[in-house]
Image (cartoon, rainbow, N blue to C red; front, side, top):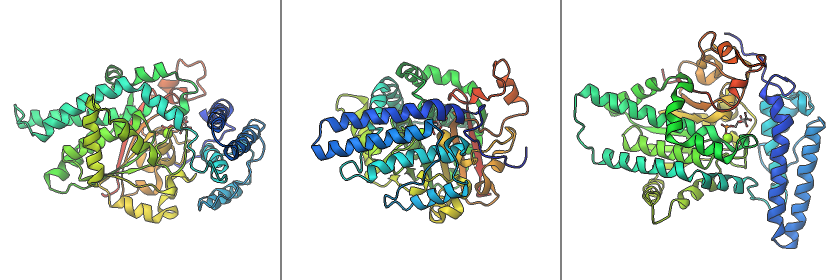
Length: 447
Ligand code: F6P
Ligand code: MG
C-alpha cells in the first residue's frame, strides 16, 4: 500500500475503462439517438428539426470516440461547470479519447451529450434516458412489492414500539441484524444500474433484486464495516445526539426505491432526524437520479390498490414535513474526484460536515472517492479517499458500492489475486466489473 498511482486510463487494455469506451459507450450513444428519434417523431416541426440536429451531434460524438479523435472543448451552454471541464481538458494536454483518464472522459461524455439538448430551444430539459429508467423500474415490480410489504410490517412494528421479548442483548442483536439487512438491501440495490444493461437483460435484473438472491449475496461483500456504523448510530441515539443523514444518490428506479426504504427506516428507528438526498442535475451515467425521477417514483406509488399506497402516503408526508429533503448541487456532475471536494465545492463540503453520516451510493461515487486511481487493493480506505479520509475531516463517509470498475481498496492481502486466479485473463481484474462483488467501507472523519 502507499502512494496513489495514476488514474485508470482508457488506453489500459487490461482495464474496464478500455472495454467501456470501445464497447459500451457507443451503444449508450446509439440508444440516445433512438430516443431522440422517437420523441422527435411526434412533435411539431421546430422540435423535429432540432431533433435531427441533436441526432447529428450525437453521431459526431460517437464518430470522434470510435475513431480516437481529440476530445474537443465543450460548447458553452451557460452552465458554470463548462469552464472547469475545458480547463481540465487543457491540463490533461488535450488528449485523444483513448489517451484520456477514464473518469474524466466518461463524465465529459455525459456532459457533452447534455450540451446538445441545453443548446437547443425545444429540447432543453429532455431527459434522454428517461424511458429506459421508467421501463427498468416497471420491470422491478416484483422486488418492489416484496420489499414494500416487508417495510410496511417493519415500520408499523417500530412505530407501535412493540415490546420485544427476551433479554436486552437479544434485542440489541436483533436490531443490529435488522440494521445490517437494511444496509445490505440498500447496497445491492446498486447492483443493477442501466449503464451495464448493455450486457445484462431485464431478466437478470429481476433475479438480482429478489430476497433470495440478496441472502446468498452476503458472502460477496469483501469488506464490511457495517458494525461500526451501527455502533456509532446506536451510541448517538443513546446519548440523544441523533441528527441528519445524507445519501449521495446513484441510480433511479429500484436503487432509489431501496434508498428511500433505508432512509425511512433510519428515521423510524430513531437513527436520524432528517434525510438529505443528493440527486444529479443532468442526465448522467444513464440511470442516475434527477430531481424529476424522485417525484416520479413517489407518484408511481399512488396505486390505491396495493401496499404501495402506504408508501406513497408515508414518503410524501416525510417529504412535505421536511424529513426527506432533496438537495441538488452541480458539483456532483463535474469530472472532479472527491479529493477535490473541499477546494472545488467548499460550501457543499461545509454542508456535508453538518451531517452525522454521509452515505455514498454506488460505483461512480466510489471511483470519485478514491480518485479512480490504480491503488494497491490492500490500501486503507481512509488513505485512498484523500482529504475526506483525514482525522478530523469533519465528514463521516460510508460507501455502499457494488464493484463495477477496477479500483478497489481495503481488501485483505492476497484476496485480489485469489479472485483473479482461475480467470484465463489474470492480468485483468475482471471479477470487479460486473456488480457481483461489493464493499461497505466507512471512515469517521469526526474523530
Ligand atoms: O463500470 C461501469 C460503469 O458504467 C462505470 O462507468 C460507472 O462508474 C458505473 O458503472 C456506474 O455505476 P453506478 O451506477 O453504480 O455508479
Ligand atoms: Mg449510476
